[in-house]
Image 1 (cartoon, rainbow, N blue to C red):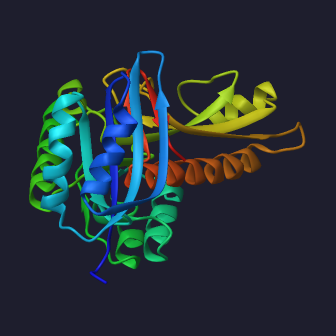
Image 2: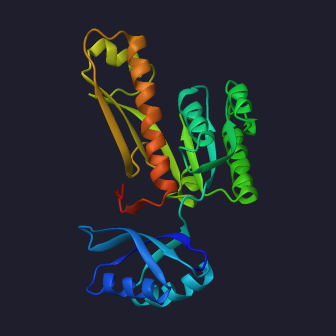
Image 3: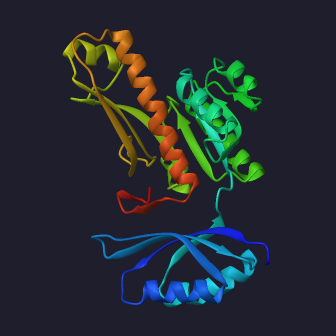
Length: 283
């Protein structure tokens, strides 16, 4: 029996009759067998689908089969190998919890990414990156020119390393609107979520002072509108008046790490598709 490749095909197109029939026929034509299939029609009248397919033909042959249908149905589509480690760039500042969690999960095979480098605006996490044998660069950002040069360096690495995903692992700087637009749908951020919400310095101290009962985290795509990009994943835990400020920080950091890891994993597995201001997640 010929060697079987395992492909993941994702696409979005205007909704109309016959899409599933057409794509199923293409899979048969490609000598394929569907091993996983999920679909969704959104309120925007767009059809979203994710398939995992075993087939003995090459990627180029498979793409030729798909292309004709893609043109007929106006599909935006992507074909990749199931489980391929996605080339990732991580931006960080001083907080270690999210970066440590991601690098550990990568090392242990729990996260299908390959972190090509860590760029930070402080030197604090250099030893952590070195422990995981990951290239680390520190670039201080004290001015608008520094920010411009930092983003220029990111662009250089994106091209050199063929970066597919940028993760903000508690990176405490705002990316320029131009940078966000160029890489829309490819930058994931994580931040705390309190009910009610607290902005500014020391959010955990504010939360403790107000006696919050819910503490959580949100992972989302980055847009030029701060913390308002399409949401990928959220988690929340209940807390009580007994928790100290330090305990709230520990709980919050754990939720942030788990939430970011889940969002990155789904993205790397091609399970996240953007539908305007929200996401379709085939978990």
